Structures are given as C-alpha cells and as structure tokens.
Length: 138
Image (cartoon, rainbow, N blue to C red; front, side):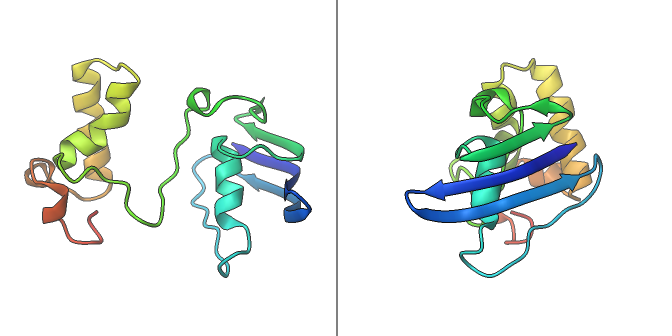
C-alpha cells in the first residue's frame, strides 16, 4: 500500500533521510519510533506531500505520488499536538475533512459514526466539545 523507494531528503547540505526504503502493507498497523531528530516527521511529511524527496519515489497503492500535490493524495497525518478545532464538537471535528472534500451530508454522517465506533466513542461523545474529552479520547 505504501512504498518508499530509496528516498533521500536534503535540507541544504544536511541529509535528513538517507536511502529510506520501506513497504507498509494494506491493513498493517505500522509505527515509526525513534529519538527526536531521527526523521520520523520528515518521513511522514514526505508521504503526505508537505516535503518533496531529493531522490527516490513514493508510491501509494502502486501509484507514484512523489510529485502529486498534497490535496490529491487522499492521505492524512495526525500530529503529536492535537490539531483539533476547540470551538467544534467531536462530530464537527471528525466531519471537517469530509466537508472540505464536498461529501454529502449522509455520507459524512455515516463515515463519522463508522469512525467513532472504531475508536470507541459512543454517540454521546460526538455532541461534546473536544475539550470535554480525556487526552486519550482526543
């Protein structure tokens, strides 16, 4: 599903990622773990398209997305600090990306409920403000 093929990422003369090749299978739960500054975020930012590799290719479902713009990759990234909208409900936070992508109201509703079940948030949580959730729930 996700393939990094001999990726290199340079910032001026500094090589942040040097010859990364990695394959993540569809449905596989995968974690990047390492000390601060080792390239975890840089790797993810290249996957989402926020950073372009200096060398190598990135594939998603067999498609070369190396030069594809961020908004065309249909992939997201969860940052360490929660990127939640504090003035929105949990439902509105989950629905936000779907609204931006102009999904129908029914499609949004169905997907929000589907995703909330996956992460063990019941319907009562969806109507709460995100600040009312525990850190783990956020």
